[in-house]
Length: 222
Image (cartoon, rainbow, N blue to C red; front, side, top):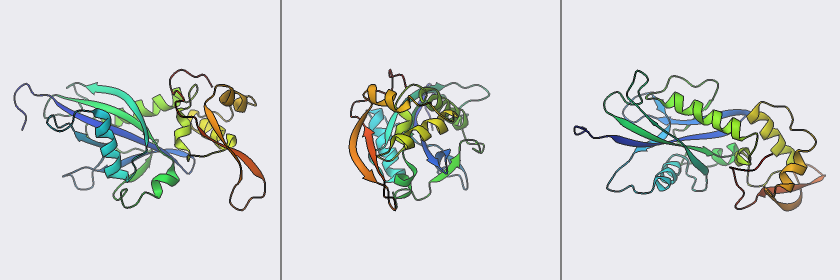
């Protein structure tokens, strides 16, 4: 029950990953609703939850078994109109976007038990305003993907420039960022080289990179 005038706050996380070269969102069974799916989230406990980012970290760990997933705050959703997020009481959702590579997520058993990956183009009708939150998260990723390092968090920790270019192209629906892509990401000091390595079964060694610690997802033009 909610006391008169009380507003409930939920912390919802849109966890995105690339599977089969398509962007997918992770959904989890909705507690108390057989067969229903929803975003990863929880209601804020005013007595126990103080730091929102800690709530996100705990939610991701509980649902995926991972404790090192990149995330950032997305938006705050509120309202009680016809598209209301919670019909029973006034509520606010502080939403986050999180990015993880699919191999890393797939290997994170048993934490990922019950997790369902759905293409962002085929998301079913979800409870509350979770469909709207997903739409905003995907739009954020695609728009920031054109000018920041953000899409790189969909890759494994180490990657090649070609892999990075392919992820950018997939996220932004652009086939190529042009011949200057490598120069741009390196000159903008977004990456750190981890040396030349061979892929499994390959003989040619290719330079691998990782995201440079402290690289901004906010103000760097690709």
